[in-house]
Image 1 (cartoon, one colour):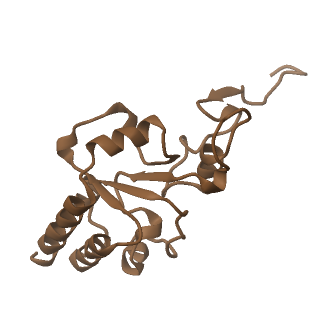
Image 2 (cartoon, rainbow, N blue to C red):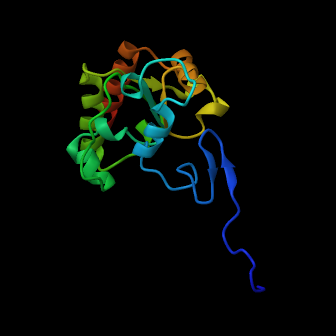
Length: 178
């Protein structure tokens, strides 16, 4: 290195977030949607029509585990979490079927968690089945405001709430029978 050479990392464009010299949340290991993701994605950009950020509906999609605010204490403990966060008013949750196969804890923990999802009446939890196929916009977990492309795709391919509850119950029975 010569004197006066710049050793800072080059700036790069992070899609949807602007310029950054450090890792974005997309580049880091994730345990779920980060608060900063919600602030950046739900927040109003200058010139955007619509309501204030606090009034936006949020869509949360998880691929391999139950979203943090919906976890039972035993499930959260098995993942090494300290408990679930409160979810934003108007949040809707989508869970990929892969999360039903990725066992967390023992069979009892999984069965209780899936029964808890089936019993939720305060927030919709919908299942995205393997039969929906692969859509490029659903490569990883995310939290986005309603109306984004990913949210629209989820609305089309996920099971309805009643069918999702039936699948959660069926999988809970499967874990209990093992």
